[in-house]
Length: 254
Image 1 (cartoon, rainbow, N blue to C red):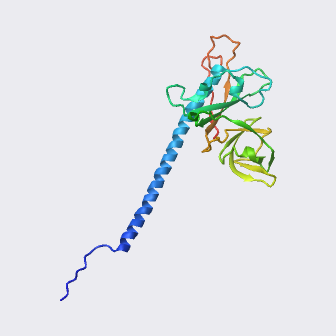
Image 2: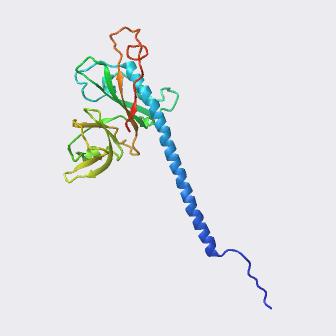
Image 3: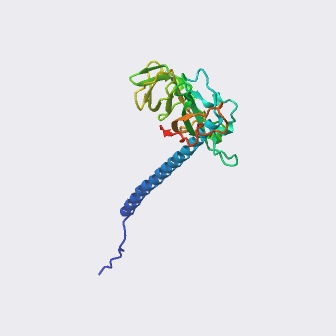
């Protein structure tokens, strides 16, 4: 009578199949961790951006600036106060801490024909300040518009991302770039999240860094600030000259 020498166990095919299933499962788990880290970073940056913009508005009220004849257009705040130190645009404010974020602002008077001191402010909050160059918005020329989209030259389009935030140089209306398409004329067709209704020949945007990488702009906020009257008594409060005046409402645009 012949003895049966076979032992119970798994075949090579079964082992390979189990390993393949385990590998696929680990890939899904790893992808979940990557997404969790990504969204956690976004949430942290949005929280920081809300603090940065409040500090920016407070500094604009503190330093102020005088009305100019050409203040109808969006004007970078650093042009209005050229003596302002570069450190004032960085966050955190404490010099002992690593300054990874920065803000820039576009300003225009709400009604320049009157004596109203209501100032429209658009604040860009960006990352990347630790690289030595503060990300700040620059103006791009509009070559044309069609079907609710913009057309700009290929050279200027190289400064945009899909997701870049554009601000109309005249009205301050905010748009988001959804797609960049090459046009037969050599221009680039910039598709927006809503039809272009601007009246300016320029748009403001935080450009692509020279070193490349992701979009430095985290968020864009808008508010209207009633600037204190510098000619009034210094005993008036910094909230607009009226004790108990409410802080300006700050709205996140993108």
